[in-house]
Length: 187
Ligand code: G3D
Ligand code: MG
Image (cartoon, rainbow, N blue to C red; front, side):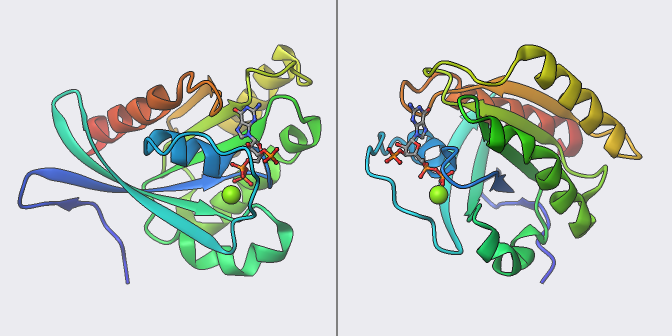
């Protein structure tokens, strides 16, 4: 099944978003925070995938985000493959307080691009847990963003934001940015 953007009868736009990144960087927490489900201290591993439907209004447009929260754990790599199909955008998340999660970002970009999305889907890079003491330097983030831009052979919208699922900082902004990418492309 090819999942394309749908202009719904009630004039809402439906967009599929995939959340990528290493385990425990805060993907599920960001999704739940955006859904207004608050912040959970107890960490439960996402098995395979989980998704939420968010009905929002951004810049006067009614938007339905279908947010797929994919398991970051390597053992779920095969399970993830099907979930990239028809995706409109990717949020690729690392933990600002965990250097390893940042070092793995290039692999996540490559995995996304291996699924036919190269140069096609906008990407928001998210440095989460900005309420903690950072272990990743601003310079290395800038270098990484330059690499991301060069990995795609066609221009792709790329944006970087630092968030906290704990305090809620910038969580709404991440999705507003995505919404605006979509409006530019589809409206
Ligand atoms: P994942 O879905 O990427 O695997 P989770 O990650 O959302 O399950 O979060 C993993 C752990 O990080 C959880 O803590 C969660 O509470 C915590 N976390 C998520 N986002 C933030 C954040 O912005 N700031 C801080 N300080 N912690 C965050 P536990 O302790 O339960 O493992
Ligand atoms: Mg999870």
